[in-house]
Image (tube, rainbow, N blue to C red; front, side):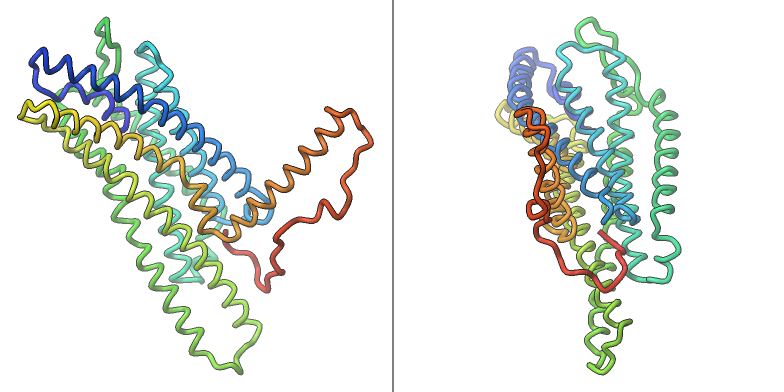
Length: 365
């Protein structure tokens, strides 16, 4: 959808030659300026997603359903950012490349958004019914859910893409464009399945938060004499569920924040403006092109939100950086300074910020 916003902006305005020429020059200028910001977001977001993959697949975190979903979400987000970067790096349009970028961007965007929906619904089930969670909220079930999602997405987009798009082999701009008869339909159904339905399903976070508050009230009602091992285990489980819920609610809020402007712009562009005021046209173009950058932030900032709101994820990140710094130090002394007998003392290997051992079995990120 982001590629469609960028590709169709200049086609929506009055056909007056002088107006169109000035608008096209303004669009080129805006795109040139925003290209630097988009490149920075793509590179920074890709680095953050790689860190997510490294941290979430540590031994202490990886054997959970949430870790599986976060892993695949990071993979899809990385693919989207790479496609954005590839779209920026095309000085000349190639028909096959442009069609491939358009198809893959839609495919991976759909998968990334719906993985977020699945993990949110899974957390809702896990908090509302711990007995169902033991049966359905497993790493094995999570992998199969993602496989089914990818299969459905491949079938859907492989079927609809040749119908909705066709090639424009103009000598100056060879690219994939939406067929005129499907233009309005595309601008309505795509935001709905990409963002509208996920927006509604992500509201299940409200029910998850409600269930957590209810469980907390039940724990407070327990008398001090009932401080058994079962109650201690339930307290730790509830704390982990609460931490993961806070992390997911933050990511879901970012989803609303970053995707809503682009969805509004994409739908609004279905009807060209009837006025010819250059200043208003330029302002609408600026908002349209900026919304693409804001949309890109959705795929680039999850690592930041995980670190800020996930205590165990933040701790694992610190430990990962510490371990890699030790390995880098060993590499430097052995292969740069040629000290093959260099060793790290046991006091230097001790991990920082270690938390006390938990009384319950690990269940979440």
